[in-house]
Image (tube, rainbow, N blue to C red; front, side, top):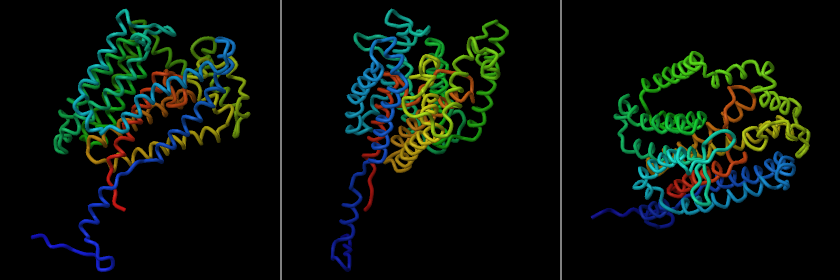
Length: 392
């Protein structure tokens, strides 16, 4: 017969009290609130950056903002159910989600594929048009989380096991690059899986080989492009190194973005007072929106936005550290890696720290597909937070 213990002051049974406190559920309202704040701020910044182009090209200053709000509504339809469903229930569908995402990439090359801005990267299924690469990112997160959760700590110390998991991601990223000519999404997909494996405790040989193979692969691609006369990737490197020499072609967007950042100064010209958004900066509402933010809000405003993202990442780190199981922790790490990589790449491109590539700023840049799928990922993180048990 078990011995019952009682608190000497209150007289309550200690074990019973401990169990009741342990069953109390947690929900990360801090993450939810910072996400809502970034979303609302994003609406304001998007309207400011896109109103001129919307008015002159579409006849409606709020054209891009309205589309972004519609994408938000669609995203909420996926995000809310995901929050309230037990994330472990999705384990049985993770493989299906992954292979379905790969299948949608293949549809780009069929009659369902849509070409826009000189690239065939979209698929139209009835009234829905989306970018399959964004779906693949979710597929890679859930599939990699499932594979890691099935491995023991000892197994992850084996480089062969790590590459078996990472190899699936390489195939997915390769299909995205080959079928949609979307190198930036391929890099992000590989980065997501690599970060998840490293955080899970992958062996040092795997980490070292990633750095060596990654650097060597990029070098080989550039050399092969130069020797074959296909200088598209190589030209981007040259534009990055000497944008002023290509001001009439590839360097135009980079230079205009740098002009916007430089003219903003410390506190900016004021919200809505950007000059570069008046047709000078291409894709001012999308990939280059951070340059308009710097011009209107200055370096101070840009730093504040980066701090908001940093706080969001920190809350995800807390959730990942306290998740109920390894699967939930890896889901959060995957989303955290996705958002972190996109924020860093977007800011690096705008400031010309790396060669130009099309990467949007999460929750702020214009883009319905990216926004909707990112919202579903946020729903996954909040669903994991709901399963955390805490003791008062």
